[in-house]
Amino acid sequence: MSQTPSPLDFLDLDRLLSEEERLIRDTTRSFVTDRVLPEVAGWFERGEVPRELAKELGDLGLLGMHLEGYGCAGTNAVSYGLACLELEAGDSGARSFVSVQGSLAMYPIWRYGSEEQKQRWLPPMAAGEAVGCFGLTEPDSGSDPSSMKTKAKRERSDWVLNGAKMWITNGGVSDVAVVWAKTDDGIRGFVVPRDTKGFTTHDIHRKHSLRASVTSELVFDDVRLPAPVRELGWRRSGETALGRRRLEDDHPIRLGIRDRL
Image 1 (cartoon, rainbow, N blue to C red):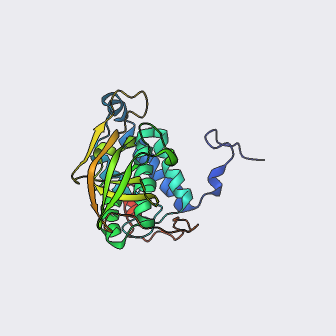
Image 2 (cartoon, rainbow, N blue to C red):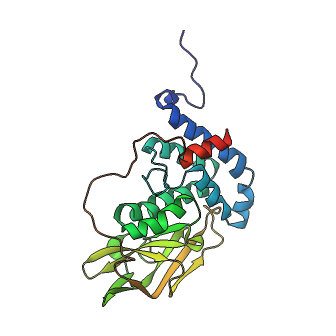
């Protein structure tokens, strides 16, 4: 006699998951139940996300969890997807924070950044001690790079950045921005620390959705970036950044799981 399928998993997808993937999913679900759901209504009404949530997510090993090294968990794509699924079930703002931090801000630095950039930014970002954002979308052209108006111009060994980005998740709380700009030889990425002169942010208020998430405009007014320290390097490769090894017992995501058991 066949077993009656669970109404929450009618296709019995759970059987396809490894023990580690289930553990990561269940730990994230517990975090959402205990930490996000009791507070998210207030965050929504106030249009905010508490900065301390970043550190809590970092303690669990969920920030940049699909990347290898530099304090990142090195999980596989399934584990990352399951964690995002559970966060999304709590609120889109929580999931958006994690995916923007890990995939849009940390990944370009991990994949294309110099060793100096990686050492400076990835460990604190993985720990939730630093927050990143991704500057592509613009006020007039949306996320269409071919219509991008933000420009970077060479001045001796420096780059000078001018333009604006709009609807940028984490922008107002970020410590660093990965910004894309047109140059004379194509579109390039730049790592812009928050305290760089000429770089300002303006939060967008009274949104109808994603209210438990900081969304901002980024403005660059003659922002001078020393090269090559702030420029993301170029690589042409089809390789992915998905980790495939098992987690060591002392890895941050393991420790986070252990703390919640």
